[in-house]
Image (cartoon, rainbow over all chains, first blue to last red; front, side, top):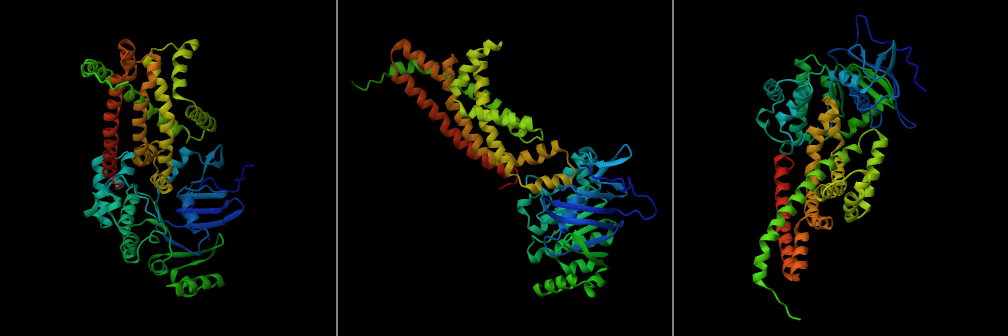
Amino acid sequence: MMEDLSNYPLELTGDNVPMVRFLKVTKRYGDLVVLDQLDLDVAEGEMVTIIGPSGSGKTTVLRMLMTLETINEGVIYVDGKPLTHMEKNGKLVPADRKYLRKARSQIGMCFQHFNLFPHMTALENCMEGPVQVLGMKKAEARERAEELLELVGMSDKRDQHPSRLSGGQQQRVAIARALAMRPKVMLFDEVTSALDPEVIGEVTNVIRSLVEKHNLTMLMVTHQMGFAKDISDRVCFFFDGKIEEQGAPEDLFGNPQKERTQQFLSAVKEAD
Amino acid sequence: MGFNWNWEFTWEILPKLMHATLNTLMAAGFGYAIAVVLGMVFALAQRTPYWVLTKVVREFIEFIRSTPLILQIFFVYYVGPQFGLKLGPWTAGMIAIGLHYSAYLSEVYRGGLDAVPKGQWEACTALNMSTRDTYWRIVIPQAIPPALAGMGNYLVGIFKDTPMLSVIGVAELMHTANAIGSSSYRYLEPYTLVGIIFLAISLPTAALIRVFEDRVRRKLGLK
């Protein structure tokens, strides 16, 4: 049976349209409910960090937004327009491939394991999307890719293949590659989790400078509480497929209200 | 019974055999070219969302791999005409051997395609690449290097299987050696030469494939 979506708006209108809106989004794997009726808004230019124990659905939030996972119930909107659905005869129906390709163009993502293309140099990695997808001229794409590699401090390694780069360097190239597509929303999925401790700083510094200098909307899943506290506008604590608690970083970290939040934060502190 | 090698006869038949070697190489080359392309088509067809197509291709590959090449050669050449498919020995032979090896190559490709990590596909989605670009520019270039060793084995394999084409009259090495034997009643020299020629081509080819594989990996930055 098809889900009744008549209660969901075809698009979001008004003064305060969020850049991203999850509206009663549910994700299940078989019987396991990963996300349960999730409501989450992210304003334009906002940096929202998602924390929580593993299995709480944090990464799934990003993967659904990148359309790497389908959703079972609800609707996700990006920039006021539905992402997971499209309008057909005045009704919302699940998005087809063509619609998805258009809708997801506003979103960029960086992965835990970088996922750079191993057969291309750093520069080619950053040119691939603009040339093949955006139809940019090679010279223009190259210029832009060089600028972005400069931004992430990887200019001198631009002709190297990923196999010649350290994890931190690969992740910085991956950030440049995602930015080259000029997304409105950037997603960072545990981008420092696979890195050696001594190179985590070079990646977090790049993200920090993005927050400071660019008006990008960002969603980040991380285990680094200090970093989350430093740069987030808002922190969401996920537990059991729901947002257990959310707020400004100083409130959530300084004065958590819910018991589960307190338990999680003290457990993380002990581990540090 | 003595070992009786006739050098004069050897030099006499060598030009004929060398000429036939060209035909053998041509048969192997054409057959392999068909197999390389068609094998990829079969491998990709099994990854489409159309389950009927996937199933048909899968069964077809199983069928080809489970029946002898020589039967397939006979079938295309002798049974084909009953279905209005009248082909010369060369064309029939190329189709049969090309199809046969495409079934094997598709399995090699399949392994290579399956080995491309999921993260590569996800990166392509995140960059909003089309399915075509994803395969053509990202997945296939990464699937080929691990498949090269297997592809090389089948190149040598198809070369060694070309003598089977002699049964429908393709004038390759074996066919020529047989003809020499039956007209001169001397089999030692022609068959020995055929063996030496096969060895002289197979061994360096296998070595060259290893060098090529290494270079491709380097070029693609995978090593």
